[in-house]
Length: 323
Image (cartoon, rainbow, N blue to C red; front, side):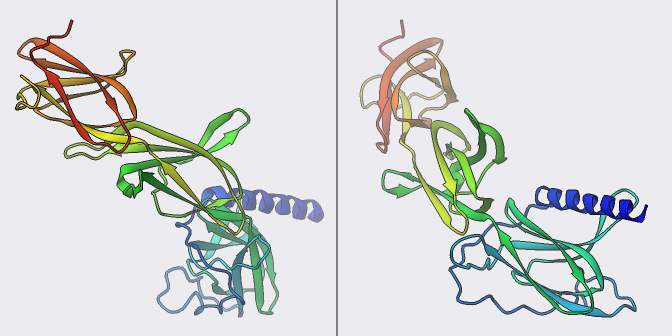
């Protein structure tokens, strides 16, 4: 009977360990160069005033130290972006495990009493778990993280695109569906994120941050890529778009007429955006479009072409009503 209970407890611990990587996402990854030796442990977690310190009792405690490395050819210590959590391996009546200690240090040292524990290290969406036993002797353990990092950058022409102007969605593909599972709704451009090694799909949307607006444009770039363990993968996405300023004028080069509403359509008639003003500006992907202007109950239209990186004015002539 005791053996059966022990086996059941072990199965519960393994199931709990498998869920930790999903339950505790960590802070953003920071790239670190290969190190000739592992970093020295920082001060002990559990110093006076530390809110994450385990409760003090009469049991003797020993130093238990951890560090994490990437699963790559060269030992590369993870120097930041880690969250460590230590759980009591004994489960409660509901199958849960009590959190004993927690640290954001890259190589923490905990003071733990004798017993069995589950240790989890999280880096972004990647994680590693280990069961350990403390038996009165110091422990120095290492967790191997099968993870790398992804950084997305955007350019328009030769100029980098500011981070607020990009919305980068990261998906986990499945079979013939590249966007099977959205795992990062918006990965900030230039900010590396730790991910488990594997294949991913990226969809980058250029945002229109003209005065008074912050909405998606129709400039959309996708890419498939792989994250390798222990490496920072940088993906540069090139958006081909430009800013068009719409004007309704009585003659070419004339003054823009106020109180005008504009609609921008694709050649097939799909509405992209509707705006009101004398000269509103819209960011559009490279291609051909139709501009429709409405002023004093009369409608006018003009076709125009957007060339990447060439911002310009689009004039709709008021002397030519739309058919």
